[in-house]
Image 1: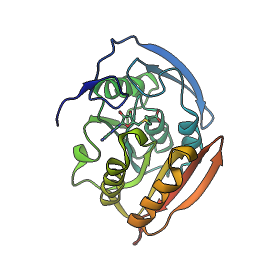
Image 2: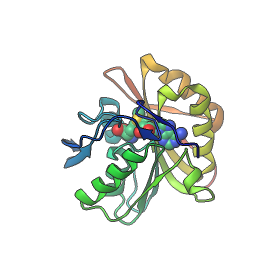
Image 3: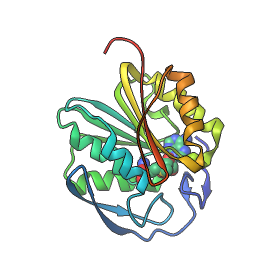
Image 4: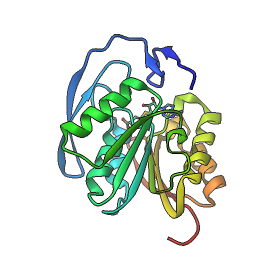
Length: 206
Ligand SMILES: C[S@@+](CC[C@H](N)C(=O)[O-])C[C@H]1O[C@@H](n2cnc3c(N)ncnc32)[C@H](O)[C@@H]1O
């Protein structure tokens, strides 16, 4: 992977100096503490879209869950807590986010978590998941988003579910159309405060 140094939250290595802090949130009825830092997404507190996604996603107790673009971990770690007999694999391109997500798994007492650095599903090539979740990196542009959606489809087992959130004003409906092209169908689950959460199911036996 090409190392990119910069000030976007999706840089491989954020150019801004580290200044860790802690934020708290109640998600799925549980109190969480997350270490966050400069150079990662939503460092001042869990994003409203992330919250909506986390409250809507359906995770079964034995699910193998994939979180693409995990940031400091709120979506994937909540998924891991909902899948005590399963496991969550969290991936981010941003090395600082990956370190934070691993620390946050420990901080919140979760052992069924794997955190990997890389581009899209690259680090889990050849593995299949029951559920995929993402608050996607909208600012990386349509071509990257489309590639990530295809990548996610390929890493879901038949019958596997995909949950994603996006801001209506930042192309949620366009993204949902792109997902429909790949999955065949998509369902809007929630719409609140300018965000929409969708579910898509990969056709085939579950
Ligand atoms: C909108 S943020 C969501 C972060 C976290 N899931 C949350 O909800 O707080 C999108 C994340 O995707 C990551 N990202 C961007 N491009 C990526 C790629 N090609 N592969 C994996 N992660 C990527 C960014 O570094 C960022 O952490």
